[in-house]
Image 1 (cartoon, helix red, strand yellow):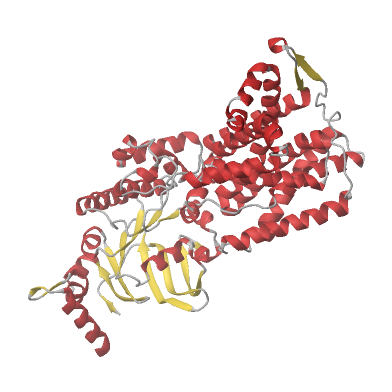
Image 2: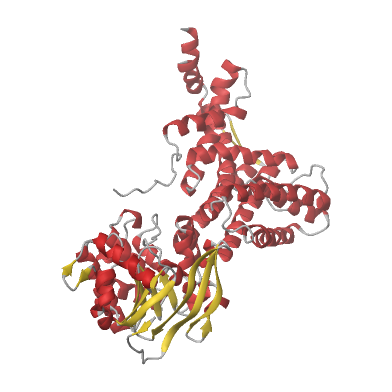
Length: 319
Length: 275
């Protein structure tokens, strides 16, 4: 009985007893959820438009952050380094399309997946040669990201919101809104969605695959840079950042590989749920450190009931 | 090859003796030649696997995406050698294909499907909006269904969407692959009727690949019959309809009335041996 009580009653009693702490946990969860969502979004865009599972998305985050910080270290002012980094990400997109995607057109998915592992290894080596392998600090202040914090006292308790986290959440929100507008309203956005549905037909109406691929990889690069700045500001810039990409995998399983909405909702859900679980169930019952596996177990359970993910495109079957 | 007639008009498309090889080894077209006059409807007829789709894809330059290659011969559309143009350039110049099996973008709305057809256009939103209305005039049913996901519309509506989408590119010529596939006879008539209207009112030329020989020859002006990668017969549509061999092989009627399909096949094989 005690165990059941510890699972089903105690956590909620704790939540009710300290609502300010609950808010703090939810906020922390939301912030990491936003990051998961951003990374998943990069995956989804590339998968939608080219059916490639882009293993390199994680390293692109590191590479973008590293380029930004590296340029700043070499004396480039931060506000110039930002557009320069975007230029580098654009060149990367062009290079990937020319060197990897175009020659491998019509090859099985698995070969393209392997090719993205190749891109990953290349970027690790290339980044190390140019910027060195040691950890760096994100140039938060030079980018005018506020570093202070707001303190609230809800319910007579205490809630701390760091300004850089707030900036990250707002920035990510704007980025996602612009992206959705672009996908749903613009000519190119429509072409990207069309390409995801039917390559052959897209070709037949004159949509140029190369152009779209460059655009999509560039967007993934922009998202990677945004993620890199936010995550780098919290944890520093190093190649270890790459592992957050694996956190995006359960998000993709939960949300569905083709769904932009799924990536966003899935990311936020996993961020918040894993924090809640860690604090209220994991630490008292399982000795903590549940965040490393919780998302995967959740994804597994979802897969059992909805193989295409919660928001995966419904497979249209007409009878 | 027997010549039953001449085509007096200037060609918008001429295909000269092309050979197509898939995967570097599979020879599919063994020297196909045909012309489509500007403003004409030309039918490309033949059984399954005769090479109709391959011919169309060679013209629209979509073969490369399927590891096919034109190894001999030339294709000229307007003033351009097709082989040196990418598919999107070809669409920009006014040659667009409607693929067999419709290939609508299933998760996009019908209207979004139509709008993808205007992807290559640079003449402004107003002109595109005007053409969208024009497409809705020809296919009123699409206007009703404009916001439904294309994947959930009926086969006929999808065929209309596919043709409408091609129209949105302001084409001079549409390569229409098997529009009757899987549609009820009444719907086939409706779609062919619209094709005819588009041809007369908008001046769009059509190259029409069809298995439905009877219907195709009633709407086309000229026809080519393909068999295993070669043109075996061509002529004015009216003449082809009266041709004894065509009646025998493709329309399933002979001098003494309808024949069973089994006999037709047998006769065909014997004739091929003899020739």
